[in-house]
Amino acid sequence: MAAQLLQLASTPDLVDRVYRTLGDAISDGSLAPGQRLTQEDIAQQLAVSRQPVLQALRLLKRDGFVQDAPGRGLLVAPLDSEWTRNVYQVRGALDALAARLAAERRYRIDPALLRQGREATRGDDVMAMIDADLAFHVALYAAAGNPLIEQSAHLHWRHLRRVMGAVLRDMRQREAVWDEHQAIADAIAAGDGATAARLVEEHSRRASDTLRERLDRVLHPDPHPVPPDTRRPA
Image 1 (cartoon, helix red, strand yellow):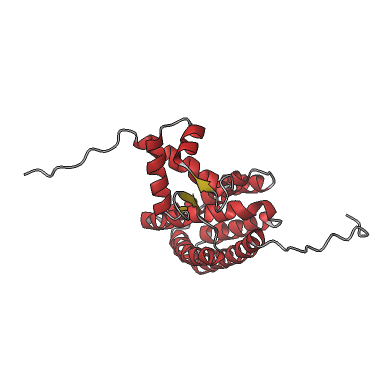
Image 2: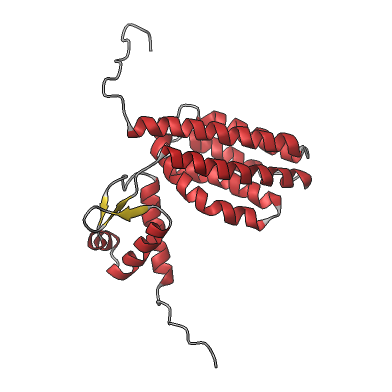
């Protein structure tokens, strides 16, 4: 006897679009940590019915981007620097594995990705900076030739995009990140897996430390900041 399966909703693409729209808004800070979310409000702003919003919110809750609010309803999940450290540890290990495998193939990462990343850091579009960074790492995963690496890293990156969105506006060393990316790409192209893996691990550790430090500053601003010394030249 054939198994009886429940019919699927007829608008999966709409649910995905609502999910991605809300996810991007959470990542770039348009929907702030702790902000309450209501189906009616979101449906009205996106000009869709409540059903795809409800399904998208369920997916966002499953993935840790929203959580139950006190009393009833949902809110944007708070940011957590300790969670960021945990995510970076896993991502660093996956990236190091990808770098070693890519070096075995002497893979050449597209130089255009590096140029585009440097260009993005010179602008004010935070999502463009995040997307450029992600594009480099996705290229690294593809270079490894093991599709399981990218699949495993995908969910971690969705959380990292959110943390990066909260702090990138305050980053003053954006260009240095792409210097590190260039060094990783060069080591891979040269077939030096040990160096590529080491550079990736160092890159991930520095990024984790920087993001956690800046995230703590965002979450816990100094109530008595020291005013700038106006006597010093700008």
